[in-house]
Image 1 (cartoon, helix red, strand yellow):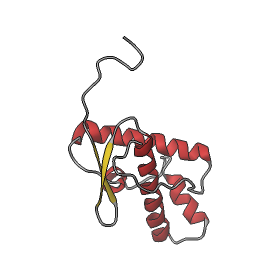
Image 2: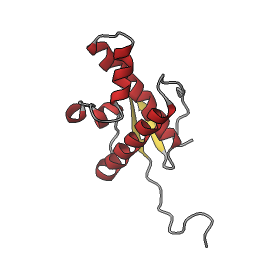
Image 3: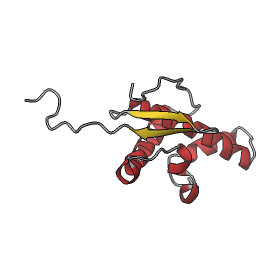
Amino acid sequence: MALLKGSKLRQDFGIPSDQLKAIKNFLQGAVYCWIKNKNEEFFAARDLMGGANFDWYGTPLYWLYDKHIKKGKTEKAAIDEAGKDLGWILKSVLDEDKRTFESRDEGRANGYKWVISPVKTTPEGLS
């Protein structure tokens, strides 16, 4: 487990597995960019995909919003629910990552921070 503090993970997001995989890959790229630029700061899903990155159209994240629209939710409700889904998916991405992350409860969202560990100079299994 890559999250230091054990916690509940969701498995079913109501979307096809290929869409979930694409969303996870997209999020992992965002996490790695965050780590490169702000590796000592906590982040939440809203930091990665909110603000200037709020418009998800044309990205795999749009499937989360579209799922809720197709269920008949209002635009605002669909945005809120897609954001919640994204937070749960981010948590699973971090849990599956080879790096270790600490988490903390930040009220409405969990915050995560990469636990910097010494760099291995030789890949495992090689001498």
